[in-house]
Amino acid sequence: MRNLPCLCVSCLLATQCAAAPAAEARVPTVVWDRNSAVTVDPYGVYPRMARTARGDILCAFDAQGKTWVRRSVDDGRTWGARVLAASCDHGAATNGELLVLPGGRILLPYNERPNDGIHPFAIRLAASDDDGNTWRDCGEVYRAGAEFENGCWEPAAVALPSGEIQLFFANEGPYRATSEQEITLLRSGDRGTTWTPPATVSFRKGCRDGMPVPLVLAGGKGIVIAIEDNGLGGAFKPAIVHTPASQNWYGEPAGGASPRRRGALRHPLPPEVYAGAPYIRQMPGGETVLSCQSDEGGRARPQMVVYVGDAAARNFDGRSVPFEQPPDKGAYWGSLFVKDAATVTAVASLRGGGVRAIDGRLGETPCEACARGKGTR
Image 1 (cartoon, rainbow, N blue to C red):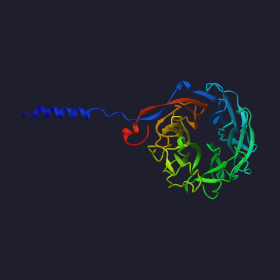
Image 2 (image 1 turned 180 degrees about the vertical axis):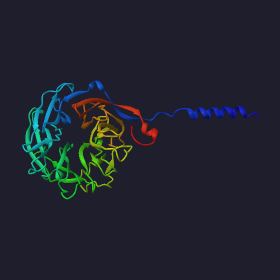
Image 3 (image 1 turned 180 degrees about the horizontal axis):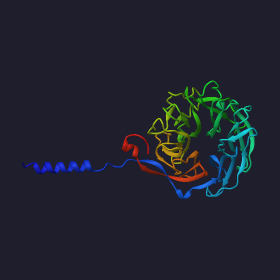
Image 4 (image 1 turned 45 degrees about the horizontal axis):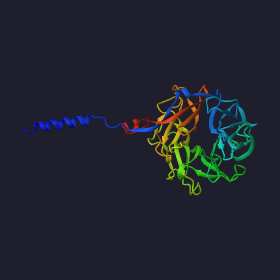
């Protein structure tokens, strides 16, 4: 009986400890400034941004079957008139990307999509040597089939510290008898004047690797491409394909079982969820940011969502939504632009709203997935 008080106190302490909440797990995320949202173009789609050598921001986008560029001289608050960058006499010039080279030259690879059944789908290149004020056609760099099901799509380029330019695109051309698709790479050692023969860098047999976006990781961690992959189980999901800097995409392509290919998200999405059209960038602090368009939550139309990963482009988590849209309205074909050391800009085509842009900053959010043990926010 003399030990009873001690026993009661021990029970009380144990009960209090069990009731005390554990430290809340938190993960990096992007916090969006709703007051910063602006319209870049009232009708455009597929927007891509880059900062010129003189410090202005350009936004390339599709409209009326052509590729246009608008300029901002006030860090994205307002946007000037459209400038025509590329057109196609027998179809659409679409999917333009921007790459600013050392010295100021700007390359704009784009997708030529014919509609006459005669001319081939192709990847072409436009360029500007006056900070994006005027553009000239630099010709075709790759040709696929003339049929829609045998086309090539969505080019994106990156410049290596060595000066080599790498141009990636989704390619059905080599698979005329199937619906398969690979990621193809062209290289240029002369600032885009000439290009190597095409090489396959990513191909999952029986599937469709698509929409590549390259990124040279800081600190010598290699090169990655973010792709949409429908071989992870179910609908398209974002995936990361990596090459060490020493290998630089030489060697065997990254197949479905390759250790150089991985699902991008820390917590995989359910098979039925579509999360395609990825885009990747890296913040000056080392964090990587990844966007895609997702119908998670049973949306009728996908919306742009953004995740934050580590310096090796792994463990993407902390899902955020830059453009809040009703379930029956979407935010499509988005991209990310690192505006400054602390700011990332999301830009997307909103259904009925044209091209919209919004600024965000890195922050933290409660890890709801950690609390549930699975899934994403």
